[in-house]
Image 1 (tube, rainbow, N blue to C red):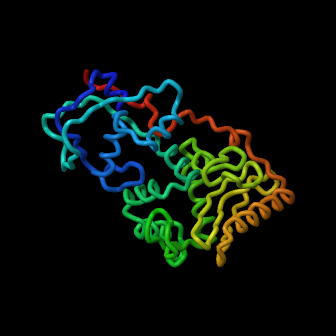
Image 2: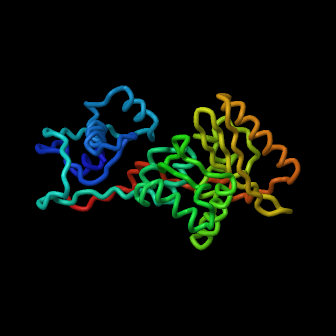
Image 3: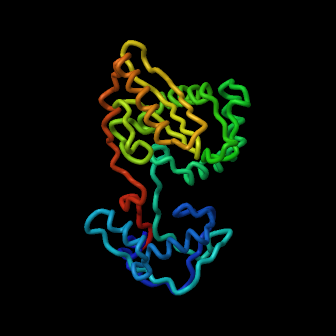
Length: 282
């Protein structure tokens, strides 16, 4: 955004940086705190070591923006009536957001999406009712899954996976477009995991709990759905090794046959892609 403003000829703002609505950045849900972070990001002269480290991971040749804002960060209920629309930064499509959320198990994004759907408790009740599950099998206190009071039974986890597959059938999407695939998405929650290639899986981790649910593609038996919950000790790494070994044993028994498209990530988009910034007014 800072570079786009520079390209539009703006390097100084004499007034304030005003935020309207729910703006969140770097896991901060307070719009003012998030906007202060945005202000730092748009002016290279304010960068700290962490911002510089993040910048070093960006595409080579990315410019360092300099947008100096003289005023303060302020929150408003509405866009000022005398405002001029300069830029539009369009988000990723929802399927891409969900895929990255699930690969990295991003709790902040999960909670934001849940809040847009009425909040965790209401969402859990609605899911249970729509899928014909006992309410006790889908108990949510938030959208991220953090907290032992969030409880989803293995049957409910499998039912939800199958329902998602059916729901997106008409959207030219597949589960592999929304969830991490072993052998393709070896980052985030799949980093250091040793599952057979082609398994679609979603992890869940608390201090003494490791869960894994997903789908095993086979030619003879079709899609085989699974849910695993290990609970009771602090050996999360040991739980994960046991889960991976179980899936390897099932692979030897059923012979996984993933579609080649499941192992190829054709997405070229990413958070913050400047190609999705459009200059509206000169």
